[in-house]
Image 1 (cartoon, protein in one colour):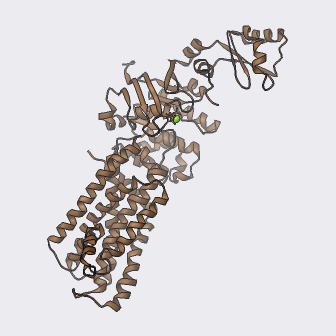
Image 2: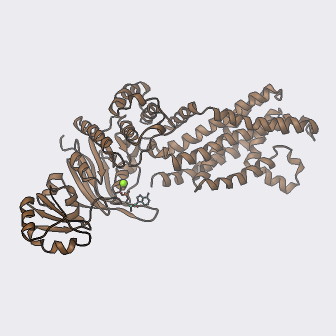
Image 3: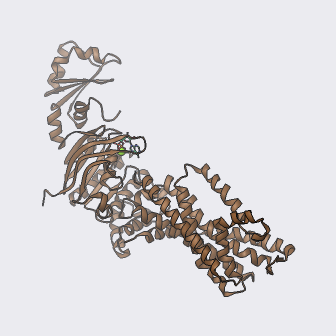
Length: 311
Length: 250
Ligand SMILES: Nc1ncnc2c1ncn2[C@@H]1O[C@H](COP(=O)(O)OP(=O)(O)O)[C@@H](O)[C@H]1O
Ligand SMILES: [Mg+2]
């Protein structure tokens, strides 16, 4: 059953009643068992709206959504019993301690007290919160709260874990700790759906992802496939004095397969970055700085939408 | 299957940390009982036309008010904080819990709170020697019915509140009702049209429900009051549920 489909969406639409924003504008995707699937897109792309529909806490405005083959409209509670949810904003219960949070959350899933006790030790260890177990949640740092939210979402041993921007707002160290935890889960066979606007996060964690922009899916594939499809192998970044990016870029346009002019730099899409840089110099064009790097999902997004992911 | 008891369990866990609030809630009616019931009672003597000592007349009204306030504070102040600021329900609803579990659970918890406050106050009233009949024990189921009515109504009102300032509007209704609903003197002092208006007040019906048994009067009037309050509770839930769904499942 390696190819068992856990989530299937077709023509999925979400129009928010307040303000009438068409946050999700007809998207199709399929999620297979055991994979780590990502929604990559900038703020406002409709990622959270999509996640909330999958989490059965928001009703689709149109289209079809099936989770475990069930319809959220009629089987919401049954579906939620098999999901773990890490929302974009931590919604830990601030009036309770760390341990009490895990306990009551387990109770909401109908787990017995004994079963919860069994799971709690392991989850505290997973979240590295053993010595904080009896503290009020209000006293935790952002990274600890995030880890608690993730630990809590695992109490029912979910088949699918939904993570909405799991590392946004965390410092680099906390991010790496979290990535490590998510890798562990993936290896244990938990199916992950995550959203992010960090292209490195998408590359690190996702087997397959969709690029989302303004409520629509621009393309879908593995990070490698997307980069190969929409970008060259390497990128040469040239930085010119402020206001001169466009003028200078004109002189080197033909060196690159494709060229993007950003407010602060020019990107040349090329197979061989060093060779391209030599060619730029040969033209007598001297940038303030020059950098050769491998193409990333950021470049994919730029190609697909003409805009950058994080502004 | 309902899981509303889990919300009660959650709130009980929170109150393990903040049980002192409950004590404060019993303190308020005690204050009224001592100053007005017993203090002013020494001037009043017996209530005209009933032959009942004044403190004994006021005590059940304060019991009813305690049940009302205990329940309603829970589904207004506390629930508003959880709904808008702590966003407690957002995470609860990602589990198999439903909006109905949350609403019923909160109302159930609130009426338990109201009943608990009333029990605490009833003990004090008894110690002060103001209870003369075992029928006074009907105050406990009575308090649960009052708690249900006001908890549900409070929940419905809370779904309309935008910010903390709106709470002043609630006070604008609650304080006059407290003063006029025969808390401190009988219905007979009003002219007939005002009597009719007072009889429509939910607190008046609540006071009837507790005062009559505590004076040893058991009659069909009690049934009217109980039905009034039960209908009020059901209506409150009927209004609150769809509105909560719209807010929480946007
Ligand atoms: N509850 C809501 N009510 C009204 N508009 C909303 C609501 N949630 C999101 N939106 C709007 O829908 C669009 C998509 O938002 P969202 O799904 O949060 O995107 P993302 O998670 O990718 O940042 C945005 O324009 C946002 O303002
Ligand atoms: Mg979002």
